[in-house]
Length: 418
Image (cartoon, rainbow, N blue to C red; front, side, top):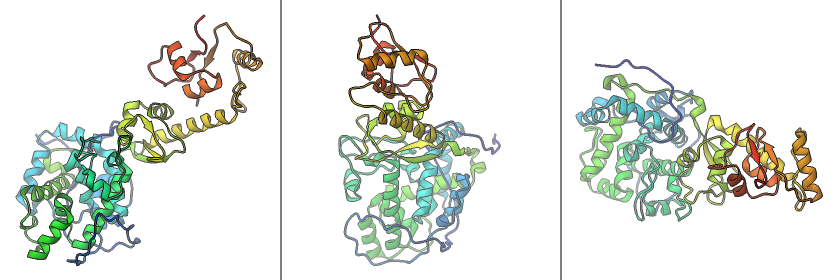
């Protein structure tokens, strides 16, 4: 029975997604500036095969409707251009509820990727490649294996200047990997002039496809899936890409509904100045450590290392809390003089117990009685530990904490139980 098409809010999600069906081949030249030059992956001296204007992606307005933005940016064939496209679309949606759950989970990442594609004047279908590759999951491959939602090989990452080592895997860095891939796809199109060949090149390698074109010529517009001497998996990759686009174009046709993506769930890149444990960053943002790790999977050793990446990806509704918490910590640190008690933030009202504690600490007297601290808004366990010159692990032990997360109003022991 066909379910009605409805738009419904997403749960906060960070893992998978799925997308769109293509419009006709006609493309409009955008009024926007040319895209940023793409990083080179090797010497490329091939002759341009067929010039083609940029797709409508550059004209997309981010009005919050990611599905309509995608449809407006498509530049390849629609659902009925090849029977294999509809066949794969039906396979994707054979379990409508599972498909809807997957696309809802992937939507935040997909929306981010679609915006990057638009900046590079790349056809909207290519924002859906991570669905074909990984369903937008931050898959970490083994040694010598592809990794990330784009499933980038180590050699390709090295050619694109993406850092990969034991502490950081840039293939799992959503902004860096996505920008590098879109720049690459834009260059492929400059060289090949046909978005179908761009997908072939993504799957089979740029120089192999250029060699095929040099030997057999550019493919005609029909059939939509070019009959060229490429591996079946390469041809199927294009079919799968057009199939997921088909579902986005005509969800009712496949008995599925596409969810809305509230603005507060959009992914935002937030600059950070100092390295910190991921657990502490999660505490600042009011998120679980696992959720933050999932959004920032490139950090392999549990530390947000600004030397590797000076930003974090956060849901937009967590950004202000994160910044406020960092600011409060910075203010507290700025008022700390080595060898003296930590002063409270200017203007903050201290409780009588806090005032007694500070006085006792400042005088250097040993305090054998129990001391407590009531957590205030904006404080973290780290800033409290600094304030009382105690180790954060001691605070966790004394207060039976399972992590560094504390809440306003929570009363903490700040000395060993007497």
